[in-house]
Image (cartoon, rainbow, N blue to C red; front, side, top):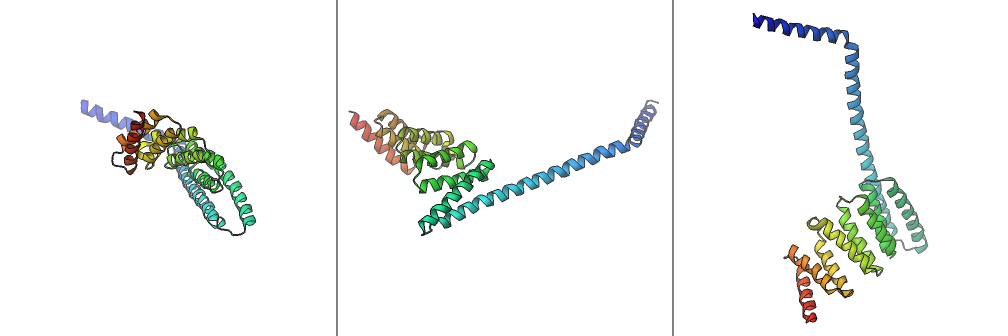
Length: 229
């Protein structure tokens, strides 16, 4: 009897469910249709966004191609005019694109400033890349380049700060980290900060014992230590 009762209950529940669906089929089909529309719209949005990203990257690369042509222009007046226009376009493009394309545009812009030996602008632009995309592969290289720009304009304290940020933040993931630590040690030596120089060189020796820069770091440690006696 219990089994029969259970079967009757199951049939009863199924019947209620069928009746509910029949009575509310318009509403249910409307909800289902809305879900389908949302899914389709999401797919379309993702596709459009991806397409826009690809187009933006292609446009950024086109700036690079333009500069490669302009930089070898023999007419200096024409070259200056075209470079100035390209700088304006790169600034505008970078300001309106927060993704990789924008960072790529900033990298091209920083390179132009560096070629013009406008080190202060180059430094600020490279730092902006690291601020815009701190987790991208562009960030440590941008900080390293910013450090070299600071060094070129004679601000060794700022250069040490930027080299340190690139090396300490990105470490093993950054191929130029050993060179950055050596640069820190070298600049600390110019500042007569022997202890800080040895510390930077020692980090290089400990983290990358087989790197080519390590041999130079070891020789500098020996030199500084010998001159302290």
